[in-house]
Length: 227
Length: 74
Image 1 (tube, rainbow over the protein chains, first blue to last red):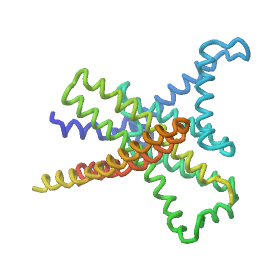
Image 2: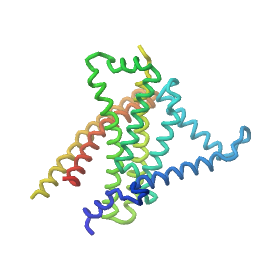
Image 3: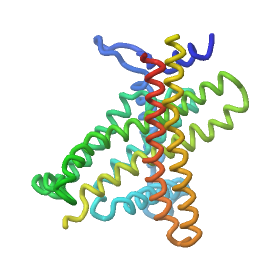
Image 4: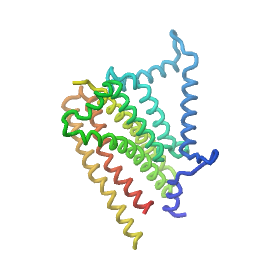
């Protein structure tokens, strides 16, 4: 089998099974696996939490949660603290999804359906946050800021932002996936492991961070100080 | 013949990477300079750098997606 054929086969999103004629994609199944892992982790890590005399496990979990919370609090400011749980959830999901390639799954974010829905969720949340912070009139008026002449560009932003969010995630994960597949095809042993550190872990985690970072930037802008 | 032209087109689309590479290089260079000048502002500089890199990198990603579309859809 030559390189092009094997690549084409790896790139195709396969339908695993159908329920009442609705096809269930591979990315959906891997998402279920990721969900199961995260739920299991949450379940295991939050057993027997105590107020005093905490164990090592609880200390580590508390440290991680506080760090993540502080990170987003710094990005969003005190006004945006209601949106932190959503952002951490997306970050965890993306982090697990992007490195799932290491464990032999096809990363779900390699499928454009997943990234499009994530980007749509983000932009809906951003607009909802804007409406919640400023009211409907204030939200509509925010399109004319800072000058009336930029209104068309602000409206265009509604479409280009989710587009670039979804394309960035999709392209990065697909790109690193393709490069890893080519490497594994050319040199099957040792070398892919070294590159996997960069392409799977560094790039995957960085893209997860960039996605929520940009979302929090948009939220901060949407709820930003009025005048 | 058509296959060759498609391959050339896809190759040309990846030229997008050039701009992104130069852009990220310049941004990182200046960020290093800024941190050297004011190490206490490293956190803020880093987050600005990541934002800028993410936006600059998007152009390379568009080129890549277009190249893939050319290869697999045409």
